[in-house]
Length: 134
Image 1 (tube, rainbow, N blue to C red):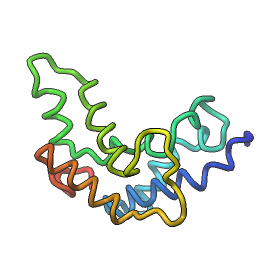
Image 2 (tube, helix red, strand yellow; image 1 turned 90 degrees about the vertical axis):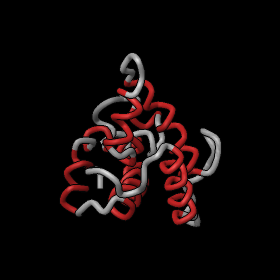
Image 3 (spheres, rainbow, N blue to C red; image 1 turned 180 degrees about the vertical axis):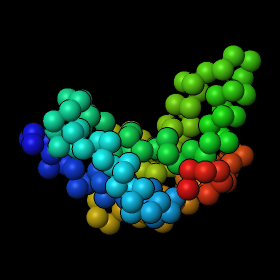
Image 4 (cartoon, rainbow, N blue to C red; image 1 turned 120 degrees about the horizontal axis):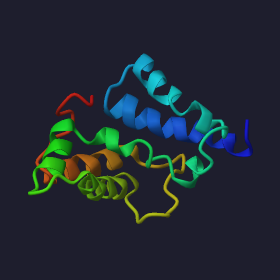
């Protein structure tokens, strides 16, 4: 394991909240999803993996497929980069702060974060739990 592997528990804990608690993923589905990042989490893979925070790797999972399709294909020219705006809005909704701020303390209010994410999805005409992402 590389020297950054000590960050693994923090990343997995955040992902468990978002995917397990918020989206209702089973332990098996969650473990399978995390397994795709094992080399990176153990600092044996992509050297810039830990350059991004915990949310970078998971926020797209919060976007219901219906919303993703509407954002990407609902333009005159399909644009997969259009999702980056939604992802950025969700990042701010989860953290409640601007990019780079320290937000992951043990006292972090996950319920307030979920309410902000739900509100952000509703602004886009999508509702939490909608679609097959859950």
